[in-house]
Image (cartoon, rainbow, N blue to C red):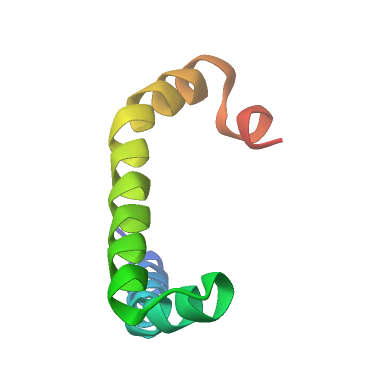
Length: 78
């Protein structure tokens, strides 16, 4: 892999990790503000939201991969 490609990949992964590390701690407080629940209930809701997101990625990742192999990435994204 060329050096420039590797640097771009590392920068993108770093930005993604920084975004997640900023969102995850503040998510329960955002849920409290939006739903008028207690902090404990908001933490449970945030956990369920994160778990459901991970489950959907796990379940539908192969389907999207097969579709992108068949039709190409650009038409699938459009």
